[in-house]
Image (cartoon, rainbow, N blue to C red):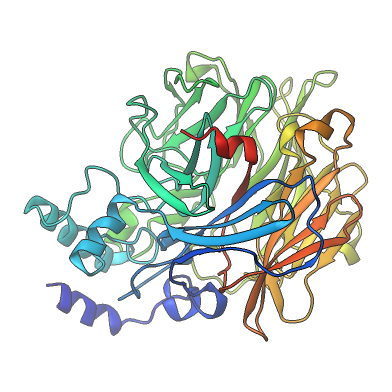
Length: 504
């Protein structure tokens, strides 16, 4: 049956969003694991205050795709650069998910790919085949089907790798700088559902918040928190009539901000031969404002914000004097262009969205005001010590030419001023990660005092490096030359040396 299915699929033209010849071409292509390589060459000088490990997640298919494949479908691989005393090491390892372990043991891909394969009648046939194999014990999906390829967060002594189709995986950084998967982590039996790949850690009181969505059954969306010592709150069910695609959300000091936008899941579209991820043009996008300590999802306040789709939200804060919640995000058009082929060029506009809790209305404006300065901004962050509080700066990837990243921008959220750091001819990277100054210096630090980390690949020389840029001046401090190619990927984090020592 599988061979007949493959033969039929290969006769059908694939959209660019599911064509492996497009999705994993060039430096989007996977790499093998690399054991720890110490004493890497450094050009410039690594700032003495940097002591720990920079980690970045990404999609890296272990097996060559047999049919449709989207970049988001690849197996999770974490890249780690450990820095201490001005010296650096590098390693990269697959996160040993349940699905990858089974596929390695069987010697072939067996689990369906959520975006690249599950569309149309072929997608239905793949699901039937997969669950038939599960029925006969050939595969086991009961312990998760996720790829853990998107987010990374260090919380309560554990580094967690995650994707929104599963619960997180616990990954440990060894003293030598290598990576070891400990296993699937359900917070000691407390987490019974998936959670999205962008949980938020409140800088005070250092609790972790996250939504979880379900595309099959109600409740389609719920919210929960974990205390600093890992105790989970009860689920708060958020009433939705249809399952919505939600990759990110935001927090303020007192609220959680939930986007309910125009990209939704309609599994019935597969029966009609289409993709289950659909842009619903008649739906009105909105944001829900819910107190973090709410016991009932019906307490949520919805504010309509028409024609708004933010794949990522960079920050949010409260302005009590106007009773508004301010949200900073990149508004993307066409909204479903990441998932479905479209002739229109993608635009990602950094925007300020003001949600008025008194009137229930929203105002949206582009932050960058000069037409000559307009640029696609996708992937990045604000100072994580100020998450949920008013921030002045954001550090975001310049996503041009899409889907590549030619540099990063430092944006003044008050004035709209843009300062760019470009990687150079034939050089591209990914998310810029902002590391605030070391803890001893934070008391006297300014918001932009710190360093930007970014993996950069030279497509002419076919070499990769990790660059460290002074975030205040945008001057290059150091370039760490890497022993192997680092593919373009997703999101990262930094673990301080003390956190490395305190891992569980």
